[in-house]
Amino acid sequence: MELEVYKISGDKTAKKVKLNDSVFGIKPNDYAIWLDVKQFLANQRQGTSQAKERGEIVGSTRKIKRQKGTGTARAGSIKNPIFRGGGRVFGPKPRNYYFKLNKKVKKLARRSALTYKAQDNNITIVEDFKFEAPRTKDYLNFLGGFELEGKKTLLVLSEPDKNVLLSARNLHNTRITQADSLNTYDILNAGKLLIAESSIKVIEEILG
Image 1 (cartoon, helix red, strand yellow):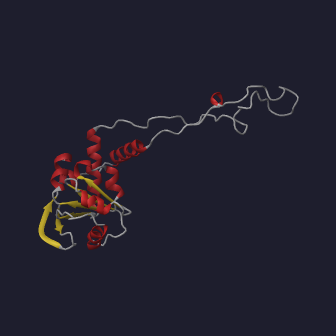
Image 2: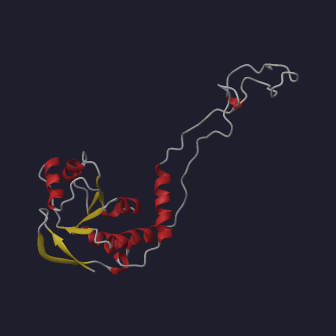
Image 3: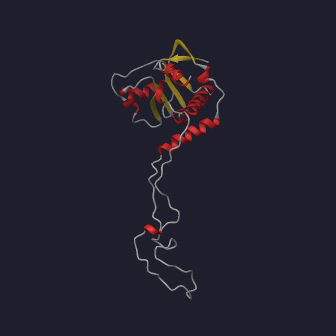
């Protein structure tokens, strides 16, 4: 697959980039994508929620009423879960949601996600660029050249650029990442992928 390279202004250049079919043109594997996204979201969870069970409630253990003859259910303690302020039955406990996923599966998932984006014509190759100073207006003008204001975008750079990162930090639905940190969730979550020209080689070296 060949894609045209665009300037930062949104105008076409005379250059074209050929994308490697082993990365951008495979048969997508939906199960691998599901596993990778599931692991990514699980790793974002803190797992710190906790509720007290009846054994952890501070209070009296005195039997609050006689066993029989009241016409209601027996109750041995004010800590009983049916009472207000009592313990919770099977409440959440701190836990780690992490689970292992093989590197080959993660690579397959990223290749599958990139293939879907390529099939839907949602990948745009942009010439490498830099900002002289961090200005949100400059990044808005950059998005405006591609008519992407307010839309979900992911810009993939080959190396970190502080000025570009700071320029986009306050914008909603805009995310910037490096080619070696690209993950399946970010690819699928973005409506449009803006890939810097030099990032293509890095992506193909990692996923090829």
